[in-house]
Length: 352
Image 1 (tube, rainbow, N blue to C red):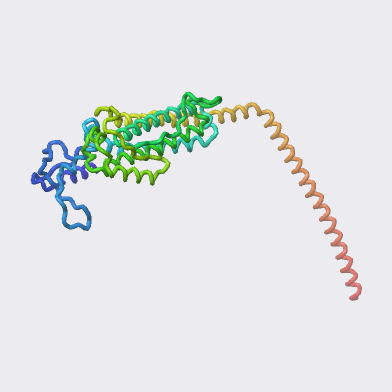
Image 2 (image 1 turned 180 degrees about the vertical axis):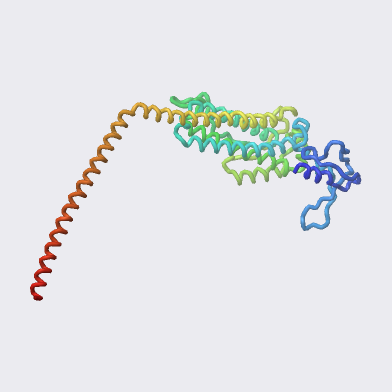
């Protein structure tokens, strides 16, 4: 199969005039081939029904500046697009993992796990950190205001509450669910801003921050507010440069790193602890069953002996009942036979 695919890739031709080039799954072109220039183009059919293919630069086909460049080498608009692209996929994976956690904690032994509150608190803190970073960035650069969401404070702790200000485990699960939905909408908003605002793809962070709010920003924010009114977002006009931040202070890379850490470390630790709790609960059940069999052995043997004696008594009673019924049937048959003989004699005497 590998040789067939490789042979197919060897014969990928294009309209650049060079001839055959080997395509690569990562960089688009294989080793030993000339890097595509500005004048190398390919014929691409935009639609199956379109019989007139269009000429497209080869660089646009084999290179994606959002995914194929290092994060620090991109302009701010491309960094926002990568945040949206990677963030949406990270949030989907986090939602799937958290759904597995919800299914596991439906069982009471796992709900009583000692490490569950602390692991959930770490996950909440990571998601909360990302939410604060992205909210602050959108507010400072794009002039989008986010109302504060519910998050318990470490200072106001009620008696008999969990560490961190949560009342119980249900409060922790509700906070994680709220943060996951909140961050998912924020990732979509980040991508929509760059795609809808003209020129935002190539603009720097300072240019977007110092420029007046574009009309497209109002439209994007209004569309997001209509789709998710519980966000409560709005556009707030600010004076240019009033926040005093510099060009190199974008927290987008840090936000992605924290999301990766939450997915790869904290959620995995949470699932591993629940799996271990499941195994421990199973071992305890098996051990309790073994102790019950060993402790109650004499009682079980006595109970089995009583049941055996009861069955024997019932069997004897049934056999004696059957014998009595057999004797009665024999007597009734003998009396019937005597009456038949008497009637036959009387009938023969009358005939004579």
